[in-house]
Length: 250
Image 1 (cartoon, rainbow, N blue to C red):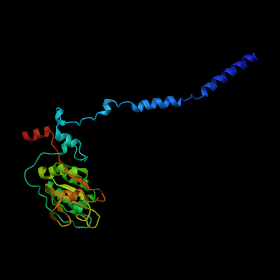
Image 2: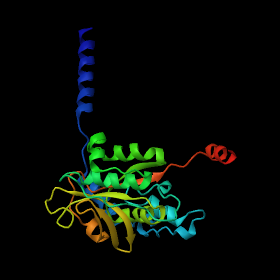
Image 3: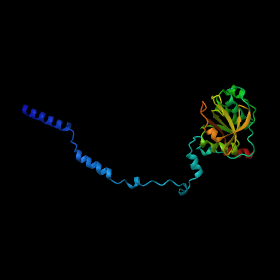
Image 4: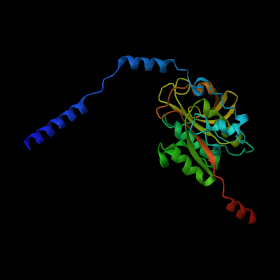
């Protein structure tokens, strides 16, 4: 019986040694296989360059909408941000800031006054909202049928929307900038855009309380405002069809 146990133990030990032993690698065979793979022709799907997509070959694709969807500016990609055109003038009345730090509040006051017919100043905005500019814009303009959005930092892709807002919808756009042209102190400045024509941009500048012109190029390359070179723009709040019907029936 002891012999049988010893034989079984020996057999188990042999099996364990076989399992622990790593398989030998035939280096010559491995090298030959690698060389064959390296010399093999590339599959056609990878070797041939893919032709670029032509929008004209795709039925049902609107090139303008495609352009908007591929814009780098997150505030511009939504086509619903482009409202209907409005006749007449924007009606922004330039205001001068009353303190050294109230350019943003002054820009808000100018925009609110143009859209709502109020006569606010930077003092009014500061007393009610402090430096919460976007909150001030939405709170003051909602009853007049506008809501304001943050379009992200200003860049070359922002101008399609800005041009449409100020020239077609007749709504002001507020932009933060920095640098010698806009803020010699380097602390940053905030202005209200009222018109664009080609590369020329007309702004209501709180620093002087007057309209002046600059260029899109100068604004695109302006150094960063401490809060970023943000773009605030307004959308008209479209009334539901039921409200339109009720209003027309009265």
